[in-house]
Image 1 (cartoon, rainbow, N blue to C red):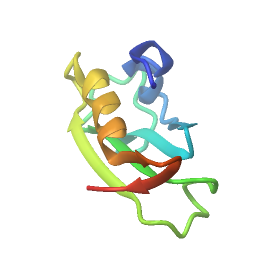
Image 2: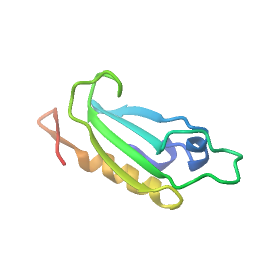
Image 3: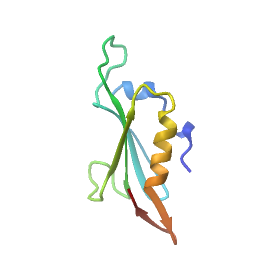
Amino acid sequence: MIKENDIYSLIHYEYGLPYSGDYNGMRYRIARNPLERVFGKKEKGEATLETTVWKGPFAFDTTTEEKITKEFPFSEKSCMIKVQRNAHRALKIEGGKNTMRK
């Protein structure tokens, strides 16, 4: 299970860096959208926190698997919990096989 403390805090994403990982054959990527460095800037602009999941084993840029993406308000404190729930809902494990669902 992906836990909230497994995911970086919001300040990480202000550096313009995505975070990616995997869980039981499911790959996930969390990034600020737009993906740009805004840390330390007075005007950060509007942004969302984008979470994407897909079947492994390939990376975000190289996979041919269908990607499921959801966006959450970037400023919302509880968005990490929503990201975690989205990742778990997207992966349905049946008989040891991973199948994606929307």
